[in-house]
Image (cartoon, rainbow over the protein chains, first blue to last red):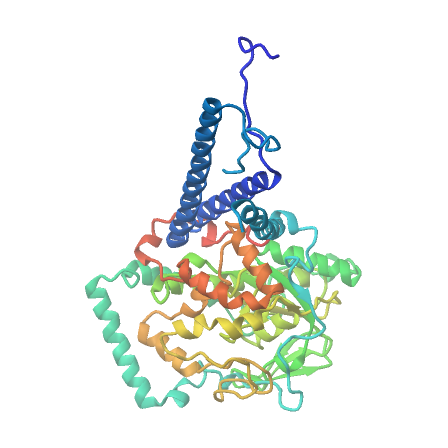
Length: 100
Length: 448
């Protein structure tokens, strides 16, 4: 076991492969629109800058909300499982609800 | 479909989109330099002949007197022209009194001053002299003339042209039908002589001047986007002056290597037709050249020579298909002088067009009348063209590459271009505080 007094432990929840791929796609999407926004700003194209910046912010916000929704669900599930005992479906991996 | 399946299958589509985006994104100038063809991006194809057809039975040398500048009064009517000039003058004074941005004294002074170098030359005059100006020829140096292979010579010419300010350079075997039949009231003829010359009746080009070096210089998009103001006009005048410097310098360089060089800007022959043959771009709906790198934001020039050079091929980057769908220039034209036809045609609009080649022909007298009406020229059709872009963001490369390869998306791209606000008129007042780079252009654009 890792000594928690010495090491900081970063816990990453186990997820299905396609959830990770969605996250990578979302990240690339954000990088793409950031690049467009910066480029449009340099090109002095104000409307293009505003639109691309808005797409970036909306995508960022939606992604965050989706993650938050999944996180809240996960927390709720976890607290229910702790209070009522082990999960009924023993095949399901613990704490992997595939949400964001 | 449950939530798990939705995300699973949804990923397929997103993965495809992102993958596609990445592949296109990699084709930004930084990475396509090793894949290019004749200096063009990877998505530009070379072809054996220009895409727009030429009717060999009809196409012939054009008398430049018939162009709109030479015969405006005849096309427009002298009475109408006088009225037009009166209105133009009244408007000019009104704008002065109003202190209207883009039409103030400083704006007009800038546009006029931009012509300064251009005014130093004309057909076989000044900087566009057909003979040596000051360069030391091999004869004077008492050495043999340059004798590299055509490929080596073409490499030298292209490097020198870029050094003198060319944005792109192409070389073609001269189609003599592109050369005017008459200019300044004199016949232009080809004769078996060693040096070009001019007398009272004719301008003589040596028979062995079979190579045309086609050159483009960038115009400042920031200026042209201010059209139709004097700031917009300064973009054109500066372009012409830079052309003048370029052809004068390149012609002297060629003479310095021991060969004949005949520099030309808009005189002598059709720069657009030569540029299409030399693979600088394609003919667009504006009946002007559109390049893959700068769109229509270029001025053209040419140098004829007897130096044997390796040739470039015409190019195809899907522009014709794009122009069929787009029509933004025609919609934006305040004089309504551009064609709305879906297909390019062989039938000309008037005597000002040279018949025998396929194009979207324009109503040039209407165009020139609007130039005068606006008091400061007009380049709106160039400013709104979706190909007029700087390359500060990779989305433009993605769109251009996709348009070249998947023309079915052209309609979507046109709408997106409009929705994103491209092509809108910019403030001529703010132009003065933009702190632009040299000549108002980004000389690294399209260079890979």
